[in-house]
Image (cartoon, rainbow, N blue to C red):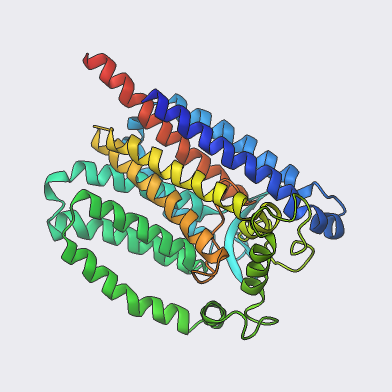
Length: 368
């Protein structure tokens, strides 16, 4: 699978390079006016990339199968961190949300670590319980309790987007593992009224739904972000207005270098640039799925499936939000959007995927 590893690494490198260029383009004017340094976000992003690269190399240098013995401790650490971040004085609060630990210049988001820790735990659990996966008490209830605890703590931050993403990924893993469809359908049906309650009873979430249904009805109010995003995408046409020449990044489109960076790509590089990003993600998912399909080790197989589902769904949601096909979720575009924790742990997830492929090749060589 060496060719698969090479192609996957090249795809991720292209996405990261895309991100570096577009983060500087999207944030330069804002950073210069607000922080007196046009390269502020670019420099921080490069620093996060360096940290992510170090951890990715470390992840690739070990045998991923050794993680199985640490699956439960990692999950326990993740849950403790999700509890601690909710405590005033420990967790950092910003814009009404308490999602971060402040570590000097770096804000660490424990939910990003939790997503990876839950994936590792679930991959280990499914590998151990292959013969009992259809049993409700032994094969379905334990992961459901873990998922429920994790999602509840993430929702409390509040962060509904990451909670829904985590739940969706775990349900995909359970489906692939052979869990009874009736169990999965029951959970989905039970989740619908819970989601309705979480949205309808929280004003800003309800505003996001209203804005999604018709952003132009109140384009200067709740629909401002989505309408500005669509203006950006529409202004780009086929070839774009040119790199660095976006108008929407001039204090019109909020979160231009984070959650809505695709809109700036669409404006500056046009439909061609947007489709290039979309095709890169499709290629990433395709090559990752090929690695998973060729993985014999059950733990590696389920872990690869989880990683591809996590990064694939996150990219689909972000793209869907940018074009107005989905309500705003607050999820960054993997490898491209500005962000510390998300970028670092996404890179580590890719490192695990490459590690799975490498170890699988070594195992086949030894067996031959």
